[in-house]
Image (cartoon, rainbow, N blue to C red; front, side, top):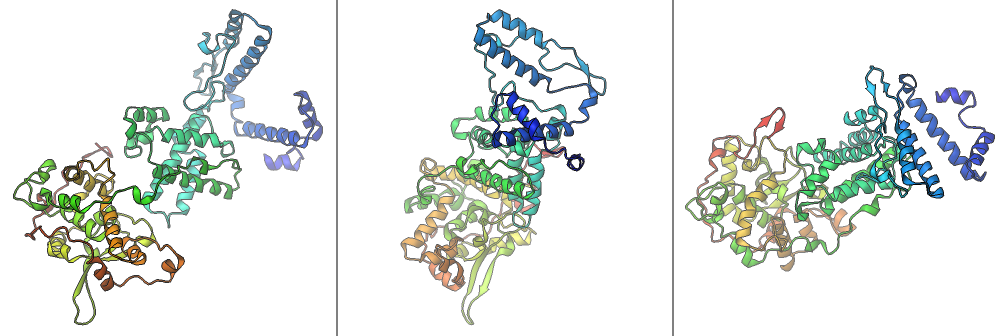
Length: 550
């Protein structure tokens, strides 16, 4: 159609017709008004050509918009002449009486606004077209039935283009990153479709502000339930409203991550030749966190560390289930609740780095000829978990205390049972949740016993990593070596680019500076969890029904 219009010199309106249209509405014949008028005509032609089938079915979904525009004009006139409210109401009712039509299948379709009752907000002189929760005025254009079906079938342009961007970055985005990006693209499409926005050229800053407002009101757990993808924005708000304020709204880091994904989508759209509003600025919506990064998680002092490693899960407990792991008894279970916590303290690794270790990522390295073998663990991406960045890939020497407590005997026992994961007690076959979440759920009970005000003082599992870094710093370990151990990038180009990784043997000398807090624990024969020994399904797994976990 466009090619035909170009060949016949019909793509643009003649200046004389544009000038006549401008003059008709009382506008000035300026270059800006000429450009705006031509743009309006292009949009009208686009709408007409993409809805050509509707010429023949007799249904005009935009009739409701036309009626509302007429009502708006009439109200303005009545305000000027101070017409009585009863007369206006009667006039509105007459305008809304329209005959029903039939669609192409022959089904009777009542035109929008056919109800003869007058809404309260239109019953007087001071009538406004109110905005709903989505920010759409009552008189604005609503999506057609076909458009709504397109969105439900995940064919909204935002979702389609988002999928292409994800596919383009598949080699550098891991599965989790791809899922997170797809999630925010789908949510934006949901917000847009509920507002009747189906063209990329119609995207405005206000739409992203609406999305930002929605994310501030959903439950913190948004995205973890499979049902969230089927909920409307109103339902998502309702779920959030039912939560206490502390459990409502996404964390600043999560919100900023979503905005980063959206910020990558906009230039991708432009690279595909689409017109995207240049006034859209997502940096205005980013959350500026205050305070120093070191203050986000407090370190754990020596007295608190002593209390943690005096917990029954380390010294002897009544059982392995729930609270019994923190009741005194004769049993010591070698599991993540035991060895993962010890590893976190003596290595400073991140929670998921330890929880996602495989049996092949720990071992021994022969040092110089005649020297001692060095125990180590390797941090790298594997099929069970990702790593944070390229600097996170590293080797860490293992403190002799870890070896003394029987860690490698535990590794051999897990390997002999045929497990790939070092801590199979954290893995549920019916869940994709991070394994660190399971460890946190188990350890948080003990942490509350050892440090009753841990939550208010921002002390959690991650505090063990902060404590490790602080110990290295106070005992004089250089920033460069600390960065190698913790998996941080160098603070300067020299540190980052021109320094070789610290040799494992040299790292062991620095690791030995970490204070020993487990000397009171006795090495014992490896005692695995019973269901791990039996290779049974995790007792905390939930069975699947019709493809969903219940």
